[in-house]
Length: 133
Figure 1: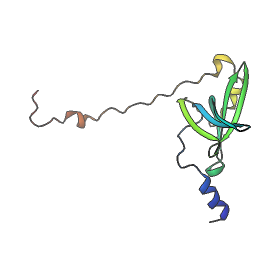
Figure 2: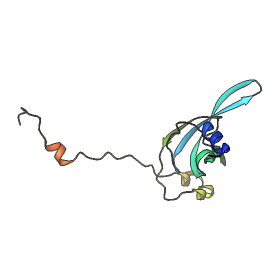
Figure 3: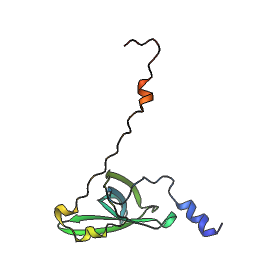
Figure 4: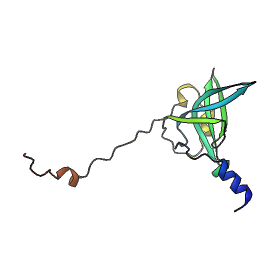
């Protein structure tokens, strides 16, 4: 193993939340102003994920006062405090660069809902011993 690989492995975060392109996320970023330190939240839609391992990044887009703002975050950055998934969007593309041309209601994505698998017929038909109908 290369020494660079060893150093990168030490710097990687142990747990990274699962999110994908199309998800609406709140990214908490640590900001240093002089001697003060605060956490600022950047909310938006993940439009791209790039790279892998230590060099993995993702791009978040949001609209501020009618103007589109995009920001690229390294996943394993020490300045990244937290990533919260607000909604999961249903998309059919790996990169959502077409969102740059859209405005107002056109920027909405259809929400993806988790479906709970129904219990199998065998599991439903088994009765507890001594139970009456």
